[in-house]
Amino acid sequence: MNGFRHVVMFKWAEGTTTGQQDEVAARLGELPAVIPEIREYSLGSDAGVNPAAYDFAVVADFADREAYLAYRDHPAHRAVVEKYITPITAERASIQYET
Amino acid sequence: MNGFRHVVMFKWAEGTTTGQQDEVAARLGELPAVIPEIREYSLGSDAGVNPAAYDFAVVADFADREAYLAYRDHPAHRAVVEKYITPITAERASIQYET
Image: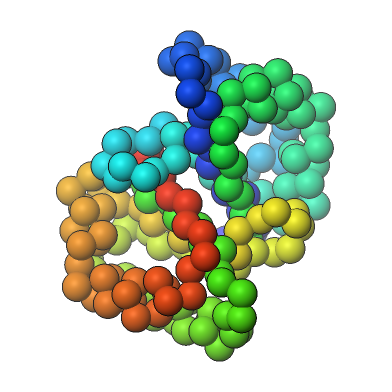
């Protein structure tokens, strides 16, 4: 099935608590119910296999670029980013590609 | 379906040619045929939506951590990394998580 994939990963800042990390996953996990453009939504915390790994990832699938942009700019998504993610982010890496 | 996901993205070095980038995708694309532990294998080049994005991503799914490690350390994979990927990599970001 052709589509558009958004991948993002984060390294959390020193001193970030597990509670703050859990809150990010919980709040993001609510988004598929309120943003219908999300086709598939996968969240995960690093399994600890490789030392240089990032801490948390989101892999999100959409029908097309426009559906991704609707998610990126959706007020419910922006609110989670601004309130829960940005305050604890040390590094962020992302890419979007056609699938 | 529960499993184990490996996500990695790269920024290519200044001066990397499109031919070198295409070679990476072509060589990686041969791996599912020779590494049976790969369950799903998705490759993509940045769609150009967000300026800070990385250039190339791999999202690979496995049955479990051991299957991922078999892929990570497989000689055919290591050969692609060493010959085609490492020489043109400026930045690399990766994470592994249980799905």
